[in-house]
Image 1 (tube, rainbow, N blue to C red):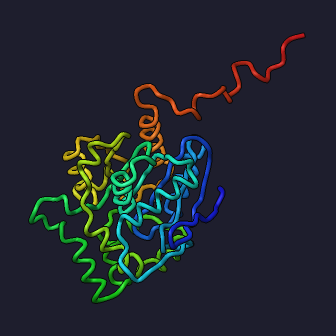
Image 2: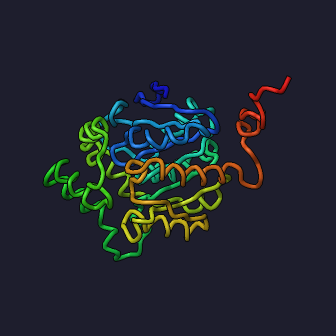
Length: 292
């Protein structure tokens, strides 16, 4: 694993790079930390150049501000990383708020994507009028205003299936605690107001896939993925597990993502140049001694 910082407008973005092959940028959700994907990135590093990063103002990146951050700023940061670290184009995976950022990136900067996987974007504004889940962001904002980050963080965890059934890495947990005010105070309005650009997704010159976990059927953060896929005519897939299965069982989640990403990048029989070179595996009989 190689770590570095990427200079961008008003921030230095901490990022990690693993492996070799077609670039895969992974965008994290609430807490914005590269550490969510460490296990998955290790699993995929044999086939992809996996780039993970701490989003602006989170953890080891700079750029924290008291002013609300719009999604265009988040998308511009992702674009900058792709240009500087990933050679100009990348397949993008985003979970939760990271999926919202990925959908925004696809609409505003389509030239830097080779594909997008949006896993459980909590885009509650696409749900029907009167649906109780549409009030999620407003309810959380009100709780944050009354009780601060600890109260909002506890409630947030209770709404997320699977949380409490596994242990987060200690360093990731400590960094997340330090990011809560940035999440609820600065990033929340952008996520709350998100509506996907359906025309841009329908016209995307690269494959777009929406998805959700098998254990999250009916959850407020899973249902929007189905609705966005229906409206835009793009594929929808079911992933294993819960909202953060990549943290709970990284090998299982990576296996599903590997298959999907490989299919997306080799669609129509086209193979990425990194996969079309000379064989690196030994041929049958290689290394055996010939009889004298």
